[in-house]
Image (cartoon, rainbow, N blue to C red; front, side, top):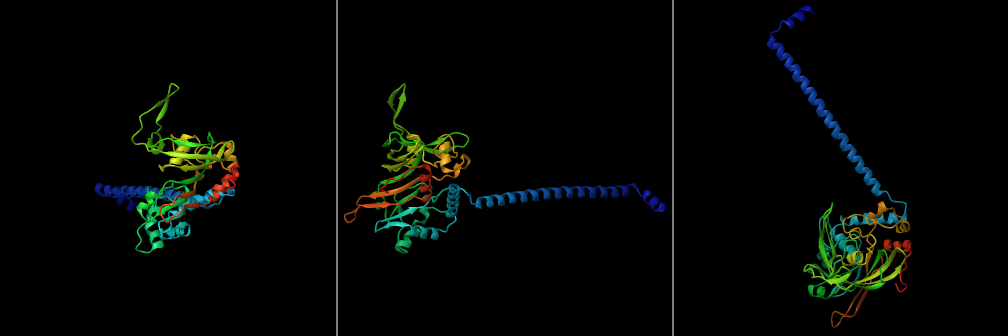
Length: 357
């Protein structure tokens, strides 16, 4: 052993350096490997954590709430998401089965909740995209695409008219009788809102665009002063009537004389100060946030304020009356029943449906 030791010690300095160099190199390699392994382990744990959280979130979404109101809201949200994954042919067949009226000029469908009329960011399926498919299903493979006669918001349900040609689509006027549950009670109980509407950008933490009022008059020192009309504003006229009310909310019948984007929601929220129940966009001008409701309304609906973001828009195109559009046509009166969630909210809020309905 001593000879062996002496032989090592008698090695030239260059060889000793080489040996130490190898040790240093080996040590550095081990250190790098340990660091890489630690990073890999950390990344793996992070991935597993994210995967677990995602699975828990999915399980939470699938979990059906016990409360009947929250259960219906949960079903509506799930149904809305499913609509975006439905094949256009399947969606066209579903709309075909729900046709309320069909003649040589017009087709009237019952628009479901959560189905957008036009495409946009994140929209996979919309009514505009399936109009050619629906036309072929109804009138054969050579049929021209159907035409929209008006528009409804994504969250609005009810009567929607399609025409076979553009001329007929232009003849169809906005003659709807729309039902809405609003937060607050309008004063007076019936009237006409005649205030132009314009689209503006909202400045704040979250910049976005909203439709808002562009009145032709304003108050200055207690006097009414006429202002110059904004050339970008649209004339907007809405008739309204209170059908039933409590201290905190009301059931309204609305008849749009004009057809401006989001007209009914803007006139109710900013004109009457009574936004539509579930309207999370127009209940507050400065921000996009879940609608704030009074303690009384929350208690009646069986909801917590933290859950109001899931409350659907309670706006339904219920009735449409069309005058004769040709020498051989007759007056057309179509009625589309209120959705189940709408009826349930009426019951919980203590609002009554008129007997004639």
